[in-house]
Image (tube, helix red, strand yellow):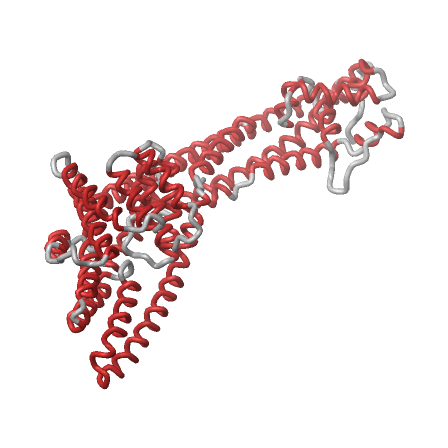
Amino acid sequence: MRTRLLPILLSLFFFLDAQAQDNGNPLLTQLDRAIEASPKYDADKLRSIEQLKLALDRIKSTATQTKKDDLPALFNSYSQLYEAYKVFNYDSAFTYARHLQTTALQLGDPARITYARLKLDFCLLSSGLFKETLDSLSKIHIPEAPDSLQAEYYALLGRYYYDLGDFDNDAYNTPDYIRKGNDYMDSALQRYPPASFQHSYFKGLEEIKSSRRDEALTDFRQLLDRPDLSLHELAITTSTLSDIYINNGQPDTAIALLIRAAIADIQSSTKETAAIFNLAQLLYKKGDVRSASTYIEIAIRDAIFYGARQRKVQVSAILPLIEGEKISRVEEQKSIFVTYSIIATVLLLAVIALVIIVLRQVNRLQVAQRIITEAHIKEQSINQRLVETNNKLSEANKIKEEYIGYFFNADSESFAKIEKFKKSIEQKIAYRKWEDVITLVNNTNLKKEKEELLQNFDKVFLKLFPDFIQRFNDLFPEEDQLQLKDHEFLNTDLRIFALIRMGIHENEKIARILEYSVNTINTYKTRIKNKSTVPNEEFEQRIMEIRTV
């Protein structure tokens, strides 16, 4: 009965351990570390912004005297602050874009006016204000602007229609938006320098939107090989490249790219980003609800911090699905733990039944011993053969008494341990401490319990046969006699023949008790007999002649 309980307990603990395992992804671990460090990156960003504000204050303090002569320096200072805020915080970026526009109008410089308007429109588009973006862009007279501003203008219009198509995401309007976006992006590419990052990036983006994914894949891979990419450029390149792998049915590669993009966004304090949001979506589809929930919350936090309206709408669509799946998983885990509690109860009842059986066996043996003792007293005149038989029977009774006592004590301890284990599980389930339940189960060391079981067997056996080791070694030449280590009572060789001395001759039973294969037991026995000075066929008989005290 006891040997049947061990496999059941092992199966239970292994299943619990499997449930607790995490399919750990080293890349996700790197992302989690970056998230933990994000307050430091943001603090560095704010310190750099503070330095720019101090420089702006110095310019303003002297501008009252020189007035218009200081407007170019003021314009440049506003531009630097805008660049610092444009992917960090919408409200601040918009504020400084407005200051840029006001200063440009004061200067009366058409190029600076167009420049300021484009920065303002970038803010509007990044925040999801599509109508306001188009209205503002339509007021720009672009043909007379420098090529650099024309390129930025057409690229902004191309992105406007791409984003509008992604936002609508329908079969009727989206294709038309993509066509318009491609037309404007072609115009932008004609004006960007061919060696510039913008030209390479927007060329790849236009190829993706035109379903020329193989060409886009080549261009983006070449772009990633450039050593001069900033963190923000690395983020938008890897994030956009992930779309190709998503459409190609390669989510694992897309996830790796989005993790890389998310880390770069965090390190550059970029809040206007879709990388971590798209990563959460892919992880949710793969069944990693815990990570998806963590990253969608970060995406919400970034969208709120930046003020990206369209990102809030996108997040609101997937957030209920993730939260619903989390609730479903919790209920499933609750059901599993209830099942474990039932199994523990059944095992407890089985131990109780085992104790009852042992007690009955003890009573029967006591009755049998009394009968044998009375018969021994009455039959003192029997021959030597009967005396020898009676001695063997007494020895067997002594062995049984000793091991039954040991077995009863061991099962009492097992009963107490299982009862304590059951109470602990029930208590932690009641308080929904699921991780504590898993920790409790993982801390149960069945290997140690098995080792203690065998050590207790060794102690009881040597108590019955204190000269067993010496008598065993007498069967071998001196160089082959066994030498035990300090902490050992019996080793495997001795334990096999100790079980034989106890009357267990079947190799299958010995193998099951010692948790070896039958072939291993046969190998041990053959090797030991071959070293003995006694013929192999007589060896076990000599073992059986070793007597108790």
